[in-house]
Image 1 (tube, rainbow, N blue to C red):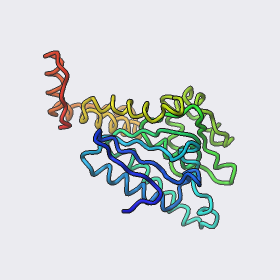
Image 2: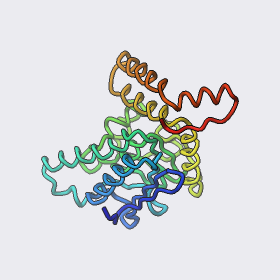
Image 3: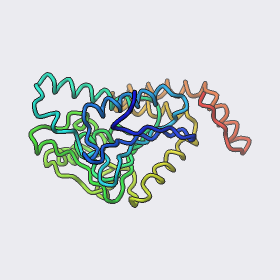
Length: 261
């Protein structure tokens, strides 16, 4: 697929960078942009050279300032449900591809933009960023996972306050809430995000992938079921070449060389 609304690059370090590239529209998510993101996420999942994914927005004003409202005005109930399910599926693909993902939030992350960031495993925000789910102000509510992921991340009370008031929070408050992992100066956002993913990628890929899966499963089931899944995943990692290399390197006092097997 040829891209008009996103930029997609995979440098030698294996960290795919996807940039939503509609700065004149504050990188709003229209149908065409979601189509391109779906294709890009599919490429990341299938390409063995991609080891992690970093999402950001073009320009210095917005990560993604929300959905393209012009496409929502005349949507029927059936069309609205179909779009929600489609967008949820696309964001869920990012969340479950087994590769660490990070949203580098370089300004406004509102509505669908925050929901996209919530589907990433980590979030880093520039100090001038504002994050919110303002949909209630125009008669709707977050339908791309916001009502589900935000309470799991920051707790029910704070999540409800953000969604029911529709008011955004500044980056520093978002960090205190646990909504973002780190806040940086605007000119350090991408380099900091890159360094964080590089640190993650220095570790064993098989173990990292199973950590992501264990946490995802555990958040969807009860504690007992989660513990059973964790034990089965630990047995799987124990059989990996990465585990043998990691434990041998530790005993031999050398740096491990992981192969992702």
